[in-house]
Length: 260
Image 1 (cartoon, rainbow, N blue to C red):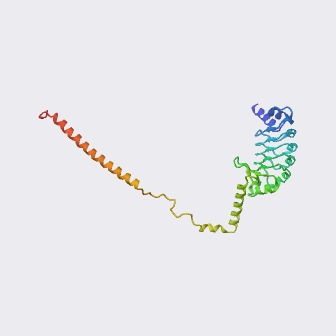
Image 2: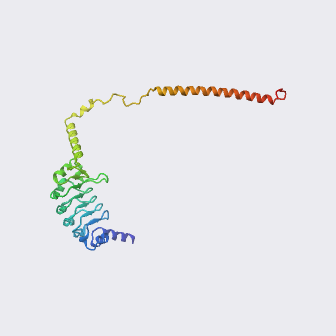
Image 3: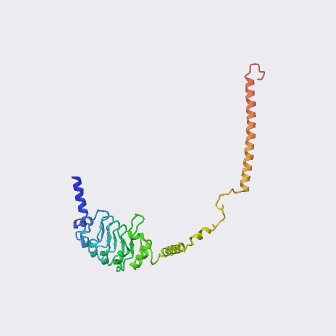
């Protein structure tokens, strides 16, 4: 009975239904839903999600979704998170004209060409294809230059994988890009051998610890030795005094002694 009930529960969660949306949001009218989070609930199909016409923010991450078709009617959607699913095409999102932020990391997008359909989304500023923190990626990320290709494909994008690549604050990205390109040319020209003749900045042994000579330390040692010698002399005097006292004490207890 337990296995049967669990299977029924999984079947109910496998597809988005009116009942699911109403129970999770408390909204009777689906068009009243503005924010919806269905993260990791075992979804395979989006069902009636397309009826939430005023939906602005949607989280469908960590499910088993393969097709985004029902999302094409969500014209007001601003942010979408479909990370960690089984998506190989984002074509339905081409009609989501207000989309500004998109997270598709951890899916099956094989080429930047799969993103050509998003070129007309002039408000799309942020896209995430790779998330190293959660070890999520896409096959297209295997190409080291994929970020540059994304910028060429979607001109409106300013942030890729959480890094600002255009606009204010993108200086570091471009600096790293220039360094990377310079290193590639350096290696390709065979100039890498020059590094073998490069001399260190400091002389050999510069960083090794060396004993430091100080008059203060020498004077301290001298004073310590003097005190130690004085202590030894006092100890010797004390031993002599104790020995004399012991001899005197023994004489008093001898029966033939004339000491009173």
